[in-house]
Figure 1 (cartoon, one colour):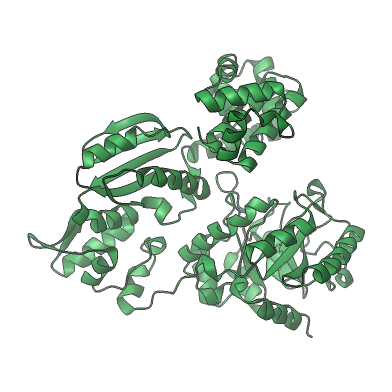
Figure 2: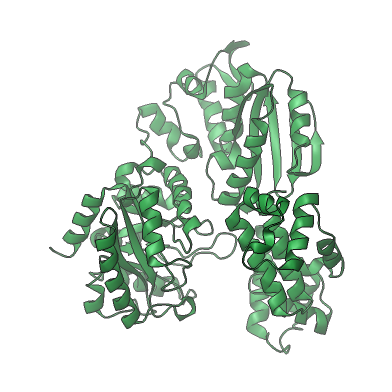
Length: 574
């Protein structure tokens, strides 16, 4: 069993215990154990289990040790199955409604007998929650909106989650001895921010044997369909995966066909038709005569097009650009020289400032920009003025200790309701950079929100606009505002736009990144990291940046240490 599945079961146990009203320390122990499994990694945990040393890990007591041993060695856990059986399955569906935690779900069950999503919706429509303690009319309305939102996005997953699961599948498929080639396809290969399922394309001399091998992988929970050239399965993590298998000579065509969006493929078929050809997943044909292509590059050449990177295959202008030889030279992971938007233990991050600096140094970054929450974000341990001054002093000490990595002082300043920032100007002036972000007051009118953002971006100390639309993928729409006006204001005031690379944000959206590029705006790909392992989210951001047509020159943190230092100095008028 993989670490993701183990951690998910431990998290579910914690939730189920909360639904039963068990002692909070008990459920917290399972939440902590889930995090421990994620941090230690699958192989490390298995080794500790085999050597019977798991209890030596902080937070793993004897009871948890026994349960983890059973889960890891057998692939199942009797305690978990019994716990699930003791609680109506519908309560777990209700837990997915935004704003409903275990305590409120338990109250709904205990007081109104609500044990299914449909029952909850009916109760809301009958106004049965209005006089219920801890709820009320506003909460009831929010629950109805949450149910609608949940149904709208049911069966969808973060790109980061799907990409990770797909990588594990590819690794297993590559172990198949008679494999020709294999690749992800579909929305994962196009780097869509939300993914419904995993598409894989492979080649083999005997396709049926490969589909059988795939259907028998340990990651598979259920085989939905199994044929000679296709296998459709549901994985242990809940997401579906499809494998298409073709002959070796058909692989380039199949890979292109199952990668492109419907709109992209339709446009290419139309182009081929005007050139006297037809294309499908099996080849390119002039009449009945196949045109041989050894690769996707050759496929595009036949259509008199430059190679179109997978991320761009959305019929979003890429075919016209490829015809003119005007496609961008997309930014790459290796272009990233440093990172900004890092939270430390000063606010709501897990790691000390020095731990962050040491990690960046060892990772080969030339610089790191520290930006803890400002004082208005009290819920996230936002820094009071004295805390920020204390952090500035520590940064100066660390600069002496680690001269080979530049440490830039910054803050993620809340944009208040009136568009002002969170600290006095004289304190902000002491920082190298300021990320201005909205964390509250999302329900303003579009006009008011636009005014708020424009005022903030006009502040001379603001360097970057953080997660510009405020969206949370699969959880919350962005707030309403005039994006075109805000981007134009950012350009006028030389403000960098953030591409927040947190898997739940990926904000600014790739569609708008193309507009930002056309305006001439700089974009910074920032992980919004709260722990060391989240620094890697930067590379999810690179994938989205590529999808948004960004080149190296468009991305601020592809610049060298010296260039960034000079940029910050120029902003201060030095």
